[in-house]
Length: 148
Ligand code: HEM
Image (cartoon, rainbow, N blue to C red; front, top):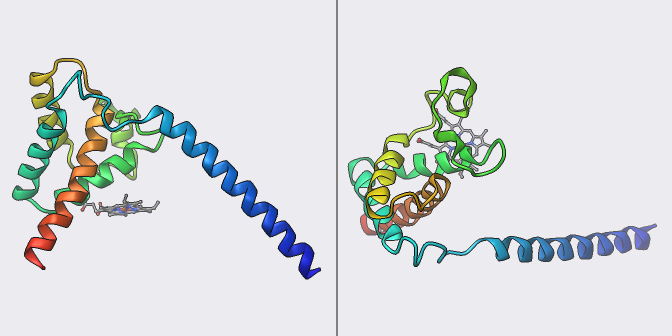
């Protein structure tokens, strides 16, 4: 009995590992960090600058932008849909988000700056994702400076 259990765990482990590898390859082929390198070379600098400004104004915004990205990923994936306005039927008005998810104004500011630099190139979903990434990085850096 014991050996059959460990044998099935063994098969389960390999099944899981192979699936994870396949998933990794599939996702890797779609996502790149240099996607906007030629179409909007200043994108990453703009997002970093604006997130930095927002954090200098209010450090909590780091967590809020990370949470905004997390909540954007509900309902059909991380597609920027949480940013849409439109009454009671939009994600923004859903119970977990209403009067709770923050950072929309920061994303609006970043989007305006990005649009001025490269009009109609960068998706809102990507801006939310990059802002969340930079928030985490900058909060870690700020914290290590203040509490070394
Ligand atoms: C499904 C599991 C989760 C539940 C039920 C949950 C629930 C909550 C709740 C109730 C709040 C307080 C909201 C408010 O005060 O209005 C909160 C805040 C927060 N959550 Fe979660 N959370 C979950 C997962 C996560 C994950 C995975 C992350 C990180 C990616 C995260 C990051 C945060 C952050 C940073 C805040 C503070 C946001 C702010 O101060 O603006 N949470 N969460």
